[in-house]
Every structure is written in structure tokens, then in C-alpha cells.
Length: 178
Image 1 (cartoon, rainbow, N blue to C red):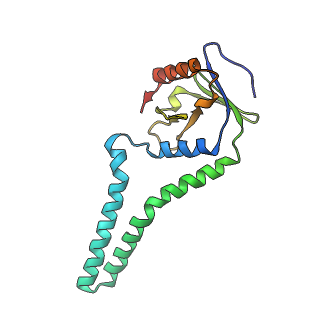
Image 2 (cartoon, rainbow, N blue to C red; image 1 turned 90 degrees about the vertical axis):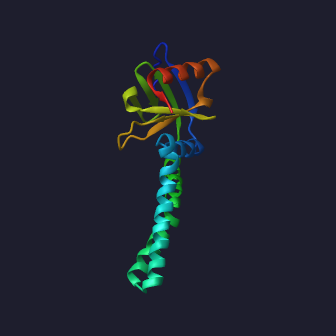
Image 3 (cartoon, rainbow, N blue to C red; image 1 turned 60 degrees about the vertical axis):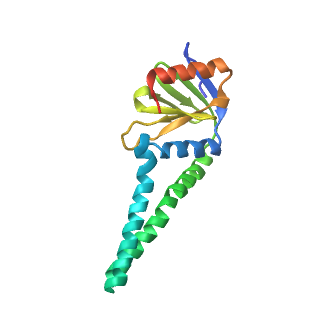
């Protein structure tokens, strides 16, 4: 790991855990803001289920096997789709679990730099859209563009409360709090 520290920067040193990854994936999966994020996915599942029930009912009335097949497919999708998100998040957390190593995260006016024994990456503030503070993490969310998800900074890596306050101030200065 590089030991360069920029004056005025906040430095966090910690070893990431699978729990960090799980919490980050959970927060990032709620990326849509406001009521749209709270309601959209469940509403889609309910609509798909209702269409499935309507198609199965139509099949019972008309005797159509096409309606029965369509209704069964829609009902199955309405029941399975919510679990796809959960299983995907678990798989992502397991895949990242082997790559968790001690890291140094340096946050300054230019952005966020993460350094480990095998890599050194710098992301400017423009790579992020907003952040969410949880009890354990600062989760940095990518902008609304596809392909950029985000990352996290573990609070336990702060040397003191002053560093946490400085990080919060930098994040508030450069990103929208979600």
C-alpha cells in the first residue's frame, strides 16, 4: 500500500468484511429515490400477479390452454422475481468475499482513493452521484448512469471522531446526501 497522504485529507484504514459488502449491496439496491424506489418494484410484482390471476380466471371461463399457460407463467414470475434480487445480492457478496483485504481509503478535495497491496484506484467526485450514511458505513452511490454502482467507506477505519466529521463535511460538500 502506498503511504502518500495528502494534507487536509481524511484517511481510513480497515479490512473490509463480507458484512460491509452485504450492507452496501442492500443500500445500492434501493437506489431509486423517493416513493418511486419504495413502490415501483412491489407494484410491478403485484400487477404481474394480478394479470396472472386474470389470465388463469379467463382460462377457467373459456377453457383456453393459452390463457392457462400465460397465467401460470405470470404467477410464477410474480412469486420468483422478488427473490432474484435477494439471491443476486448474496451471490455478489460471496464473489467479493475472497477479495477483501486491508485497505487505505483517502478522501480529499479531488475525490476518493482506495489503495490495497495489489491496487491503487482514484475516483473523482464526478464518479459518484450521492451517498447514504448507515450506522456502520458511508455508501457512495454512482450517478444514475448504468454501469457505475458505488462503494463504501467503513466508519470503523476512522482514527477518531474528528475524521468522521471531516469525511461527512467532504461528502456533503461534493455529493448529495440521499
